[in-house]
Image (cartoon, rainbow, N blue to C red; front, side, top):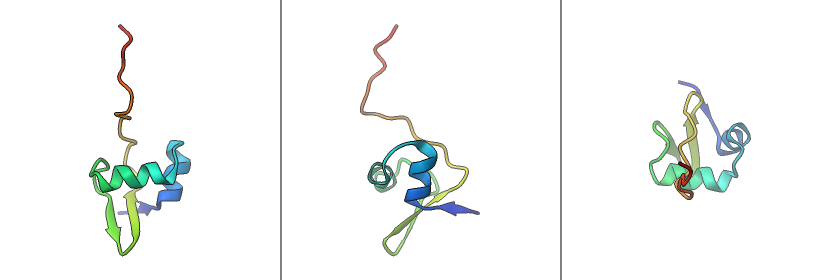
Length: 58
């Protein structure tokens, strides 16, 4: 399986590396593994939904 770093994922998904770090630590990205101090994210992983905002449109 191929992996990408936080920086690569942040460029792909348009969010900061810190936000992706929170998602990995919270178990929100399936298949993400931590090797020493580096998070490795599967290249085929999809960006999780942002729970900070609720969809209020009807």
